[in-house]
Image (cartoon, one colour):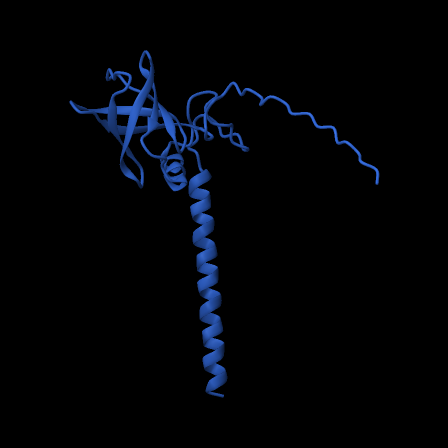
Length: 164
């Protein structure tokens, strides 16, 4: 019997420069925040299931806990973990559902500050309104109407066959 040795190399884990546990989505969404002393308006700059970056004129202290009103989720507790002027890095006390992230992205305006949201595939002139959402709503309405008309014709055909 021949015994072969196997060579293995165990590498040290690669250190990531971004220590975030979940992917953050860049957006600009105005929401309300309630601290222990006051209610204030904040702007969410980026958002993930475990944390977010907000901007506000309210002075929060590192370690302070507050309630943030997220679309479709409501009041969600978060804690300030870092402060940089008017911007505050926060973590949620428990991860929020992925649906809450999607709802926040849908509620955010379609165009943000330069570099925050990818450019649309179709360029729209500055004086025109962004028609991407209404076009999709129109498409949905047309498809629903066509489906309803097809269903009515099918039922009419069945009824006429039964009476023949």
